[in-house]
Amino acid sequence: MKKNIWNIIYIVLFVGVLASLSVLMPFFKSDMSREKRTAAAFPKPFTEKGINIKFFKQLDDYFSDNFAFRQELSTADAVIKAKLFKSSNQERVVLGSDGWLYYSESMHDYLGDDVISERRAWRTARVMKLIEEHCEGKGAKFLFTIAPNKHTLYPEHMPTNYLKTDSATNYDKLLEDIAGQEVSFLDLREAFWSDERVMYHRYDSHWNNEGATYAVDKMLNAVDKPHYSYAEEPHHIEKSHRGDLYNILYPSIDELDENVIYDKEHEYVYIGPGQDVEDPMLMTKNADKEGALVMFRDSYGNASIPYIADEYKDGTFTKGQPADLDLADTKKADTVIYEIVERNIPWITEYVPYMDAPERQIEATEEAENADTTVTIEDRGKRYLVYGHADDKYCDETSGIYVKIAAGTEMHIYEAFPAEYEQSKEAYEGDNPYGMYIDKALLPEGAAVTVLSVKDGICYEHKGK
Image 1 (spheres, one colour):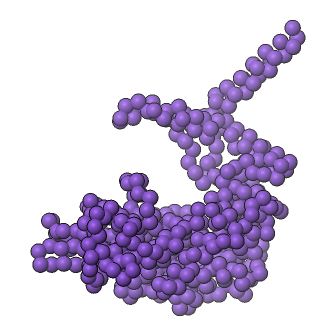
Image 2: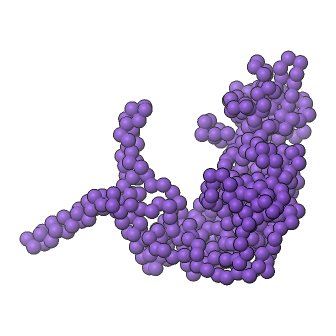
Image 3: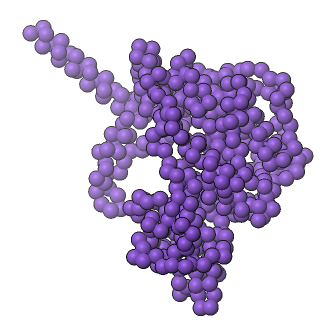
């Protein structure tokens, strides 16, 4: 009898605790900014299409993100698992030795999983080469660089159950094609490997201020831009950085990471609405400097921005994808830098950069018979977007893809980016997508649009579906 009473009491207490987590939700909200994401909103039972069939899944996500004391309980669980089992309770964070944390989404580079094909490596380099050609045509210097993953530079703190690959990574594969296509490239991986200093955060996936100034020095040297060197600048170490990985793993603990703080004060000012390095678009000005920069960047650019902005009269820093080269034209940039982190190398061929496609002189010699090739044309403001995929049978690892436009006696051929456009629109799993933007005046109504590809020295013409 007593046992039954205690079971009932336990059940009542358990249900009461669970109920309190829901009842107290409005009064104890999680600070999702620490986890760099937005909490799931309360779902609507009906949508424009009728009943929301995902309602209960979305409701579960809502309670998972919003129940009271969520971050405190998650932190307690993380501490217990880290101390007792040396493991992380967050799938996005890998727990290393000596308190080091790594970003799990970059583990495929470390383990050698999901490595891009030889064809995609060529396509990636080609995207960069076409951007460089456009920039140089406008009188701007161009530089492409890759920020190395943290574990690429500092693998010594990685858990022993993660076995580093001996095969070629995405970075390795890309280097050969970058050299072959003569892309203006800065190898930051080699630069960091050549320096014994640890210049990445322990609790964060990014480089610290010392790493940022080191990378900036290499970038500006590569584009021949005179600049201030921080190599001998007085500095001190301060616990002032809130690590992104630490916040994900221990959201309710206010532990800060060490960072290098330089004595030199910055001279640039922000102009426009963006006032924080996390903002997707930032514009800066330093009246005492010369030149205009446009930098396409990701989160690794955050710590770099202050040191680059100091060196240009006008700076524009954007996280926008696809890369909008009209921005560089509008800002009359004399320097264009494209920075991306190693783990995101595959992204480069997932977007068609926004710029006029370059015209080429090439002649089709054979017809691609029964080609599984598609052509779609969409209105995109002042330009048309032409995109689709070319039949894999008529392409090899180094095939360029072109679009031929014939109207009356006029015929012009343009090189397309070997990149995807809204891949979810079509069930295409091949390695020969293409896309390009073209001024509407160059694609008159009724024009015949076909696709060209070069394989083994033969130029095939495809009639798209």
